[in-house]
Length: 146
Image (tube, rainbow, N blue to C red):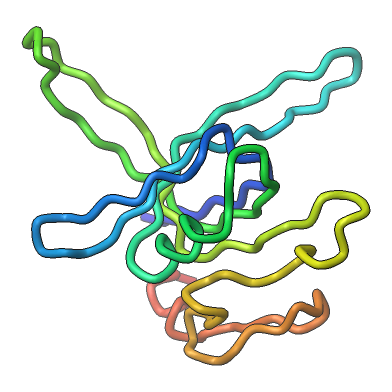
């Protein structure tokens, strides 16, 4: 059975990022992301709840605000809970592994700055802002059955 859970979204923050801490003191940042879906005659918007943990979350909370453009790489996570009225609720959220701070048109200072855990990729090597270079960690492919 093949399993693959990866998502890449580019959009604008719908609210200021909220930084909270778990009981163990681990920082987690929550924010909303609006992604335009362009169709032939009309334009629709999809909204996603995103969480980023540890240093990545702290970086987002310190440097981003409502309306800022951002690219998020991560995975989908399904969660369930019981509401105060006793009803069961569920949601699918995005858990960010890496983000890129995108610039607005005419704003050269912010464009393309990496923010993935202090500018570090998943393989531990530093990321480049060049789109030609790709940081590939072969350990990520060990679970792929082909």
